[in-house]
Image (cartoon, rainbow, N blue to C red):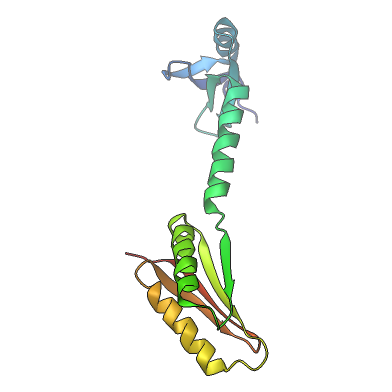
Length: 162
């Protein structure tokens, strides 16, 4: 059995955010035409409640929601920046790279330090060099991941939680 009241009556929020309970659909459409807005239903009529509708500019509402959605997607996406160097890097060059690393992390990016091992480089010397570099970054970043492969050493850093 179909309830005719549910098909013809709705709850309305007008352009001034005033709530009107149980208004006829024809009356709601007339109000929408008077103020040149669209009648948009957000919740369908259930067994106990009427449909919830609102008078608004649908194009503008859709544009604002799309803008919010895109902003939320951008904020959730986290880019990983990579800084590469060799074990024979000089101290001044390390300071320069740490300066850039600090900027990346302060801007909300994750950072990956990658040391490429070529030729006859001693792995223990390369590891100690990487540990020295990580120690210099401890005041603004924390280590989240380490990889020791045959031809490279990689350490991922993220902003330090306070």
